[in-house]
Every structure is written in C-alpha cells, then in structure tokens.
Image 1 (cartoon, one colour):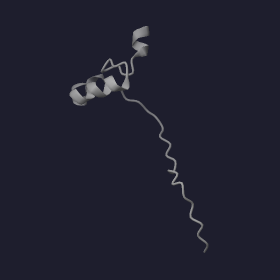
Image 2 (spheres, rainbow, N blue to C red):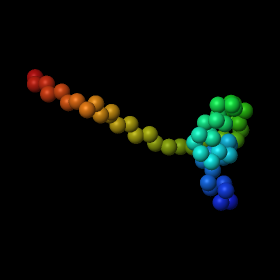
Image 3 (tube, rainbow, N blue to C red):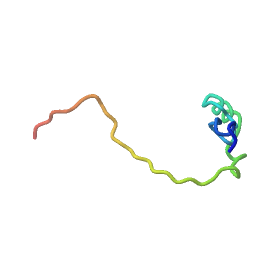
Image 4 (cartoon, rainbow, N blue to C red):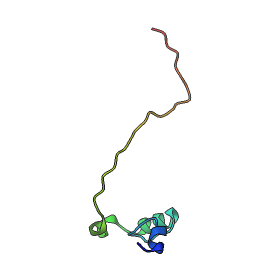
Amino acid sequence: MAASAKSRKSSISKARSYAEMGEFWDEHDLSDYWGKTKRVKFDVVLEPEATGMELGLAF
C-alpha cells in the first residue's frame, strides 16, 4: 500500500479527514459505490451508560 493510501481515512471517497469524508457522503449515495464495498466482521461491546446518579433504594 502506498504511503498516500495509508494516510487516507476512506478508500472510496479518498478523504484525508473525517470532515472531507462527511462532505463526500453528503453529496454521494452509497448505492452508487456498493460494488466497491467489502464484507467485514467486528464485535460490538455495549456497556451501560453512566447516569451520574445512584439510587439508594432499600427493599
């Protein structure tokens, strides 16, 4: 992979920043690029959101 390709954040939009990537996808539709996508597998770990408040309930 070339050095310039490593610095890109996205291979489809050729964006070098998240702002550029957002601008690209604001003007383009994923369905036009579906053939350039590839299947990936990843895990999502969901943790409870902290509320900043504990309830001291006695039963």
